[in-house]
Each structure stands twice: as C-alpha cells, then as structure tokens.
Length: 156
Image (cartoon, rainbow, N blue to C red; front, top):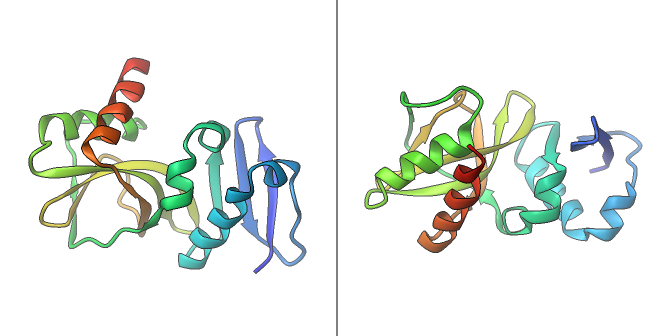
C-alpha cells in the first residue's frame, strides 16, 4: 500500500492511497503518523484528513486507535452543527454513568475525518454528526475524558 501525503490549507495533512506514494517531511519527524495512516486505511476508505493540531497534540489517538464495534447508531438531538467534539463532551458529562467518550475518526464514504462520539454501555453510538460508515478511535477513560472535555469546552 502506497500513501501520498500533502498539507491542505496549512491546517490539515491529507494521506491518500496512491500509485506512487510520497514521504512528506512531517512524516519523518512524527513516524507514528505513517503507521496510523496505514492502519486506518487498511480498515477502509481512500484518504484520511488529519488536523495538524492532532499530529502535534493528540498522539494517543493516532497510536492507540482501533475500529469501534457497535450495535446501532443513535442521533444526539441536542447539538450544534459541525461541533461533534463539544457536543459529545457535553453529552458525556451528563451521562457519565452509562457511556464512554470516544475520539478518533469517522469514515464518510471514502474519507476519514476527525470526529468524537459517545458509546453507551449497550454498545450504541450516540453521534451528533452524520452517521458514519465506520468509526475508528480511542475509548477514553474517565480521567482522559475529563481532560478532553475541559480542553474542548473551554474553546466554546
């Protein structure tokens, strides 16, 4: 599998399956990105869009992510559009006893995008965005979830 890397709009690293492949300088410095891209693209999709902020700050989800299995998807109706990280953080804070916060990537058709959602004890995904084809990420423990919420919700 060959992967071509390029920076888009000075804010995202795009990794895409390609015939020729390329090695972007950022990949040399952060070797785990290459491993992450191979792992996630082997699960499905043709490209992954990684916010540069994630590369520099959220190494844990890129290294420890996995395909998340679920029984069904439930729509989070109390949400702001295009704000999945904060929507999920708020939902988790109100329902800590019955769910876990998950952050990672969602596959929409052929592209993986940065995403956050909640998974219930019954393996139901509570998603505030579009229903994805697949979900890949890290289930946060309570301490990690608290830190994530603090970081995400102070921006809003």
